[in-house]
Length: 213
Image (cartoon, rainbow, N blue to C red; front, side, top):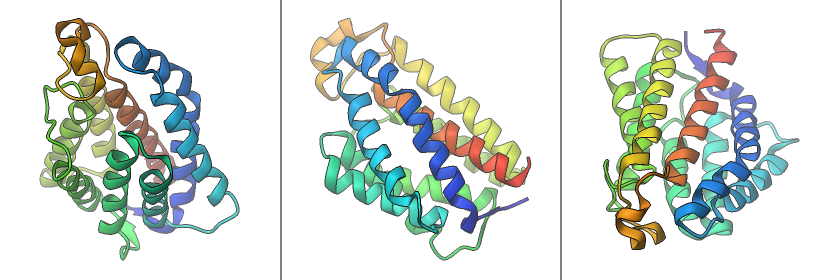
Protein backbone atom coordinates (compact mmCIF):
# COMPACT_ATOMS: atom_id res chain seq x y z
CA UNK A 1 0.00 0.00 0.00
CA UNK A 2 1.20 3.52 -0.82
CA UNK A 3 1.15 6.66 1.31
CA UNK A 4 -0.83 9.63 0.06
CA UNK A 5 1.25 12.80 -0.15
CA UNK A 6 -1.87 14.76 0.81
CA UNK A 7 -2.06 12.90 4.14
CA UNK A 8 1.32 14.18 5.25
CA UNK A 9 0.24 16.72 7.85
CA UNK A 10 -0.43 14.09 10.53
CA UNK A 11 3.00 12.59 9.91
CA UNK A 12 4.70 15.98 10.09
CA UNK A 13 2.99 16.79 13.39
CA UNK A 14 4.04 13.41 14.76
CA UNK A 15 7.66 14.29 13.98
CA UNK A 16 7.24 17.65 15.71
CA UNK A 17 5.78 15.94 18.78
CA UNK A 18 8.64 13.44 18.89
CA UNK A 19 11.27 16.18 18.86
CA UNK A 20 9.44 18.12 21.57
CA UNK A 21 9.18 14.97 23.68
CA UNK A 22 12.91 14.30 23.35
CA UNK A 23 14.23 17.87 23.66
CA UNK A 24 15.63 17.46 27.17
CA UNK A 25 17.25 14.13 26.35
CA UNK A 26 18.86 15.55 23.22
CA UNK A 27 20.33 18.44 25.18
CA UNK A 28 21.45 16.12 27.95
CA UNK A 29 23.48 13.83 25.70
CA UNK A 30 24.75 16.78 23.66
CA UNK A 31 25.97 18.40 26.86
CA UNK A 32 28.17 15.41 27.67
CA UNK A 33 30.53 16.05 24.77
CA UNK A 34 29.37 19.31 23.14
CA UNK A 35 27.65 22.55 24.09
CA UNK A 36 24.31 21.06 25.12
CA UNK A 37 22.02 23.15 22.93
CA UNK A 38 20.97 20.54 20.37
CA UNK A 39 17.66 19.73 22.00
CA UNK A 40 16.83 23.40 22.51
CA UNK A 41 17.57 24.31 18.89
CA UNK A 42 15.74 21.31 17.49
CA UNK A 43 12.73 21.99 19.69
CA UNK A 44 12.69 25.65 18.71
CA UNK A 45 12.71 24.94 14.99
CA UNK A 46 10.26 22.06 14.99
CA UNK A 47 7.88 23.81 17.39
CA UNK A 48 7.84 26.90 15.17
CA UNK A 49 7.04 24.70 12.21
CA UNK A 50 4.28 22.90 14.06
CA UNK A 51 2.64 26.20 14.98
CA UNK A 52 2.82 27.47 11.40
CA UNK A 53 1.14 24.45 9.84
CA UNK A 54 -1.43 23.93 12.59
CA UNK A 55 -4.21 25.55 10.58
CA UNK A 56 -2.82 24.83 7.10
CA UNK A 57 -3.68 22.21 4.50
CA UNK A 58 -0.24 20.91 3.59
CA UNK A 59 1.17 17.87 1.81
CA UNK A 60 4.03 15.79 3.08
CA UNK A 61 6.33 17.21 0.41
CA UNK A 62 5.32 20.80 1.10
CA UNK A 63 5.82 20.27 4.81
CA UNK A 64 9.29 18.80 4.44
CA UNK A 65 10.30 21.71 2.24
CA UNK A 66 8.80 24.29 4.60
CA UNK A 67 10.40 22.69 7.65
CA UNK A 68 13.78 22.47 5.93
CA UNK A 69 13.59 26.08 4.82
CA UNK A 70 12.72 27.22 8.34
CA UNK A 71 15.62 25.31 9.88
CA UNK A 72 18.03 26.58 7.26
CA UNK A 73 17.05 30.24 7.36
CA UNK A 74 15.80 30.85 10.89
CA UNK A 75 17.57 28.45 13.25
CA UNK A 76 21.13 28.34 11.96
CA UNK A 77 23.98 26.81 13.93
CA UNK A 78 25.26 23.48 12.64
CA UNK A 79 21.85 21.82 12.85
CA UNK A 80 20.01 24.31 10.63
CA UNK A 81 21.98 23.82 7.41
CA UNK A 82 22.28 20.06 7.88
CA UNK A 83 18.65 19.23 8.54
CA UNK A 84 17.49 22.07 6.32
CA UNK A 85 19.39 20.67 3.34
CA UNK A 86 18.27 17.10 4.02
CA UNK A 87 14.57 17.87 4.46
CA UNK A 88 14.29 20.37 1.61
CA UNK A 89 15.79 17.88 -0.84
CA UNK A 90 13.53 15.10 0.41
CA UNK A 91 10.53 17.33 -0.12
CA UNK A 92 11.63 18.37 -3.60
CA UNK A 93 11.94 14.77 -4.77
CA UNK A 94 8.33 13.92 -3.99
CA UNK A 95 6.64 17.29 -4.64
CA UNK A 96 4.87 16.11 -7.81
CA UNK A 97 3.81 12.70 -6.48
CA UNK A 98 0.27 11.90 -5.36
CA UNK A 99 1.32 8.68 -3.67
CA UNK A 100 4.62 7.47 -2.25
CA UNK A 101 5.58 3.81 -2.30
CA UNK A 102 8.69 1.98 -1.13
CA UNK A 103 10.79 2.85 -4.17
CA UNK A 104 9.82 6.51 -4.04
CA UNK A 105 10.47 6.79 -0.32
CA UNK A 106 13.87 5.16 -0.87
CA UNK A 107 14.60 7.65 -3.66
CA UNK A 108 13.56 10.55 -1.43
CA UNK A 109 15.86 9.43 1.37
CA UNK A 110 18.75 8.73 -0.99
CA UNK A 111 18.46 12.13 -2.65
CA UNK A 112 18.46 13.86 0.72
CA UNK A 113 21.51 11.85 1.71
CA UNK A 114 23.34 12.72 -1.52
CA UNK A 115 22.56 16.41 -1.12
CA UNK A 116 23.84 16.32 2.45
CA UNK A 117 27.06 14.64 1.32
CA UNK A 118 27.74 17.71 -0.81
CA UNK A 119 27.92 19.98 2.25
CA UNK A 120 29.33 17.71 4.98
CA UNK A 121 32.46 15.59 4.95
CA UNK A 122 31.32 13.22 7.70
CA UNK A 123 30.50 9.65 6.77
CA UNK A 124 29.66 6.44 8.64
CA UNK A 125 32.06 5.96 11.55
CA UNK A 126 32.60 9.65 12.26
CA UNK A 127 30.02 9.82 15.09
CA UNK A 128 27.42 12.06 13.44
CA UNK A 129 23.86 11.78 12.15
CA UNK A 130 25.34 10.07 9.09
CA UNK A 131 25.72 6.94 11.23
CA UNK A 132 21.92 6.88 11.52
CA UNK A 133 20.95 8.21 8.10
CA UNK A 134 23.24 6.04 5.98
CA UNK A 135 22.06 2.59 7.13
CA UNK A 136 18.45 3.79 7.08
CA UNK A 137 18.89 4.90 3.48
CA UNK A 138 20.62 1.67 2.48
CA UNK A 139 17.94 -0.51 4.05
CA UNK A 140 15.20 1.40 2.22
CA UNK A 141 17.03 1.02 -1.09
CA UNK A 142 17.40 -2.73 -0.55
CA UNK A 143 13.75 -3.04 0.46
CA UNK A 144 12.72 -1.26 -2.74
CA UNK A 145 14.91 -3.57 -4.80
CA UNK A 146 13.42 -6.60 -3.04
CA UNK A 147 9.86 -5.38 -3.68
CA UNK A 148 8.90 -5.09 -0.02
CA UNK A 149 5.79 -3.23 1.08
CA UNK A 150 6.15 0.30 2.40
CA UNK A 151 5.13 -0.70 5.93
CA UNK A 152 7.64 -3.57 5.99
CA UNK A 153 10.39 -1.37 4.55
CA UNK A 154 9.74 1.41 7.07
CA UNK A 155 9.86 -1.07 9.95
CA UNK A 156 13.25 -2.28 8.75
CA UNK A 157 14.39 1.33 8.30
CA UNK A 158 13.54 2.08 11.92
CA UNK A 159 15.61 -0.88 13.08
CA UNK A 160 18.55 0.25 10.96
CA UNK A 161 18.28 3.80 12.30
CA UNK A 162 18.29 2.57 15.90
CA UNK A 163 21.30 0.35 15.27
CA UNK A 164 23.12 3.23 13.59
CA UNK A 165 22.29 5.56 16.44
CA UNK A 166 23.53 3.09 19.02
CA UNK A 167 26.77 2.48 17.10
CA UNK A 168 27.89 6.05 17.81
CA UNK A 169 28.40 5.29 21.49
CA UNK A 170 31.59 3.38 20.74
CA UNK A 171 32.91 5.83 18.15
CA UNK A 172 35.31 8.74 18.52
CA UNK A 173 33.95 12.05 17.28
CA UNK A 174 35.73 13.41 14.20
CA UNK A 175 33.63 16.47 13.40
CA UNK A 176 32.14 19.35 15.33
CA UNK A 177 32.78 20.58 18.85
CA UNK A 178 32.89 17.08 20.31
CA UNK A 179 35.84 16.17 18.06
CA UNK A 180 38.06 18.29 20.31
CA UNK A 181 37.67 15.68 23.03
CA UNK A 182 39.27 12.95 20.95
CA UNK A 183 39.02 9.57 22.71
CA UNK A 184 37.10 11.16 25.57
CA UNK A 185 34.11 11.38 23.23
CA UNK A 186 33.88 7.58 23.22
CA UNK A 187 31.14 6.13 25.40
CA UNK A 188 28.47 8.72 24.64
CA UNK A 189 25.82 8.70 21.92
CA UNK A 190 26.00 11.44 19.30
CA UNK A 191 23.12 13.89 19.68
CA UNK A 192 22.72 14.34 15.92
CA UNK A 193 22.52 10.59 15.40
CA UNK A 194 19.86 10.44 18.11
CA UNK A 195 17.76 13.29 16.71
CA UNK A 196 17.97 11.79 13.22
CA UNK A 197 16.70 8.51 14.65
CA UNK A 198 13.85 10.33 16.40
CA UNK A 199 12.84 11.99 13.12
CA UNK A 200 13.04 8.85 10.98
CA UNK A 201 11.25 6.72 13.57
CA UNK A 202 8.42 9.21 13.99
CA UNK A 203 8.16 9.60 10.22
CA UNK A 204 7.95 5.84 9.73
CA UNK A 205 5.42 5.37 12.53
CA UNK A 206 3.28 8.21 11.21
CA UNK A 207 3.20 6.81 7.70
CA UNK A 208 2.48 3.26 8.90
CA UNK A 209 -0.46 4.61 10.92
CA UNK A 210 -1.79 6.42 7.84
CA UNK A 211 -1.62 3.38 5.58
CA UNK A 212 -2.77 0.93 8.22
CA UNK A 213 0.35 -1.19 7.92
